[in-house]
Amino acid sequence: MKKISPVPLLLLLSAWLLHGCASSTPSALRDAPKQSPRLSQVRAQPDVFVDTRIRWGGTIARIENLPQTTRLEIIARKLYDHGEPTGEDSSEGRFLAQVDRFLDPSIYTPGRSITVVGRFARIEQRQLDQMVYHYPLLRVESHHLWPEPEPYQEHYDPFFYDPWHPFGYPYPYYPSPYYPYPHWQHHH
Image (tube, rainbow, N blue to C red; front, side, top):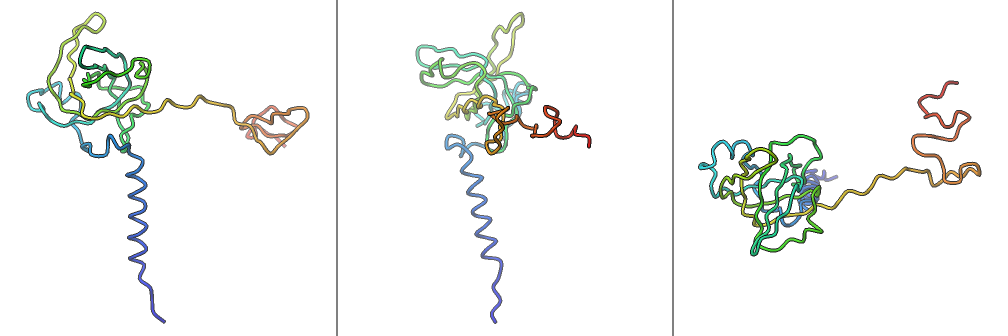
């Protein structure tokens, strides 16, 4: 009996997994550099990074439409491997992203997550509240505006019907004589 080598199967599985990972990255970010300098590095040594291609992302703080361009002020956040900003409450600071077209301010609203790919141009000084802030400015080649998260909804068990609770029991509550206490507080 001939023995079948597991190598072709492993190669096929690896290719499938890699394709799945690649397809989760939006097309606008696929050719982006995997490693970009950090915001603090660029602010500390701007001359070293002029014209460097960078992928940064975060949360939109402000949008400003000018005659030929749109400027986004972005609160920088760490990015997941596929390019989406994390929801962390920490940031290295802010940067400006200049897009050479009109972006609708009713879509690119403050609080939305965005990732941009572009070339570092310069440090621009602007007023931020009561201080002068040094913003790294990227000339954007491509960008991806991430979908807004779905609002949280209570989870109900669709398979359980109780005439006293016709909409089910909210997770993690289960039908029991101890309702409405969570299941981990049951004492028998």
